Image: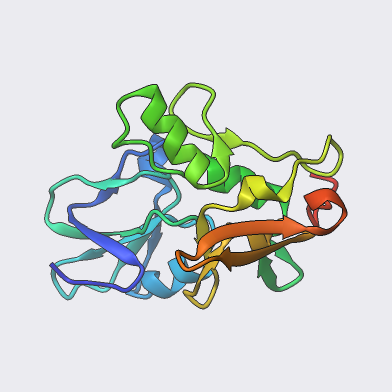
Length: 202
């Protein structure tokens, strides 16, 4: 199977996921540039290329897409959460919308028991309250502020493909590693409370 950095490859067209309607958010292009398109689109979850040299490709927006075993290549963005909002032309993870989308995108497909789902959600600084996805564990600054330590676990991938601690996504929180075992710590000033998100109107 062909490999593309930042993507998992499966046989078939990309289908299904949490938003399976309209063929999982399919968008058709009369070229083979969908990798670049998907890299630049925070809502894109994967793309398809034909196995032949045909000059077309497709992108998708459904979270959790899978290949349907037909004669195509489905390239799926890996499970690490991606920033999904902007400040001008800058992609950022300091917005509340990003945090909501990130929690909703946590992969729970391999967790059968509720305790396993809770563990998977907590690992990304989210919480599990039932259903098929995680929800936010930290409120925005219009609500009661939560302590930075709730964001000590989890990572995201920035636009340059660099893995960063989720702690950095919450304003006022700073990430560090403690002791020989490099235990993750997320702290902030003023009683370790984060000071909200950049997009206070969301």
